[in-house]
Image (cartoon, rainbow, N blue to C red):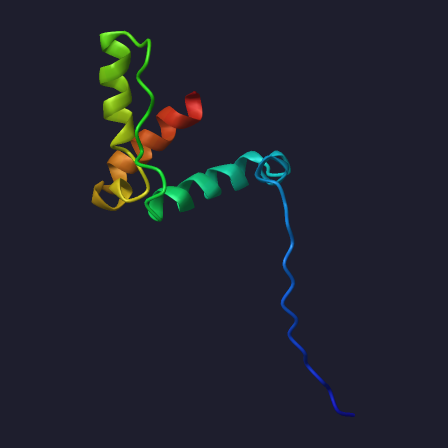
Length: 87
């Protein structure tokens, strides 16, 4: 029996908010990581109306991203994971 394989290109117009609303939290995190890796997100956190302590904390946290993980030791990565899981 012969098999025929066809590839069809289909354009689907989906509103961004519909797409994001349909994502679970893991998929949203994956989307954010992808956008950061592609340079679409600078990793900056809006600092309007923040206290000095909050601004400093936002700066520290923004340095921990997907690429920063590669520069951490296994112990540092595990510590960050434990802290994140508590929150």
